[in-house]
Amino acid sequence: MAEVIAVVNQKGGVGKTTTVACLGMGLAARGKKALLVDLDAQGSLGICLGYDYPEKYPVTMVELFSASVAGELDETNAEKAVLPYGENVDCILSHRGLTTLEFALLKVEAPSHKLAQVLSQYQERYDYILLDGPPMFGLLTMNMLCAADWVLVPVQAEYLAAKGLEQMLRSISGIMKTENSSLRILGILPSMVNDRTRDARDVLKLLEDTYGNSIRILPAVPFSVRAKEISSRGKTIYQVDKGGKVTGAYERLVDIVLESCGKEAPDV
Image (cartoon, rainbow, N blue to C red):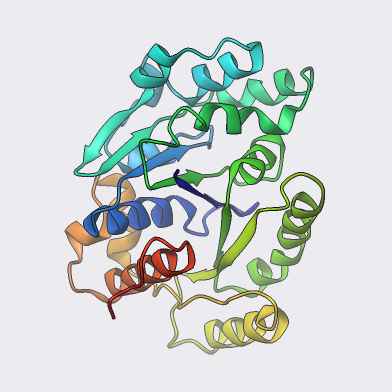
């Protein structure tokens, strides 16, 4: 059975898509099979992986979600939705059609559990399923948290972003209490951190002081121009910055995921 990791934050631009792509490739390099699932109507994950026009593909998360809502999930369509990216890595795209699905979800029974039905078709084929969420907390994000075993929260090392984290964590806690008692918080991931600035250092301290006693503050991902560019190049940080600081940060994240999710002890 796959371990499902939801990467969420209601704020955009915090590194969710980059984290999903780099974590997926890092797990694949360790011999794990990973499925990367885009649940953002902007389709950023697919574009990051080189699928520039997700809406042109006949089966995406839009079609799978719609079928789940209608009670018409089909194994053939589930297979068609999976696209290859690299060795041990596949992806499922999304596009702006997802925006209309939230209204459809409001009209069905158990609207926050439709994604879990979709993912059940892939559970036996992968070691990890990574979910890239939208920059808001709505029914799609609730579906992610209800379907996930783990939640990872990237946060930019800026004061307002860190302060806004409280509301996101409160929402996650609510899901854990009412919808998915087996959901666990993998950690808070400081992203795009320029530790040469006092502001970034202050934010890291704020995160540690505020949440460190109850939630793991993961090793920070440094700011890198190359990391910001990968979304437009169809490549991951492992391909454009091998041996760099950002690559090292994601390698450490892979170690933590492997250790925390019980797949193997990291060799470090």
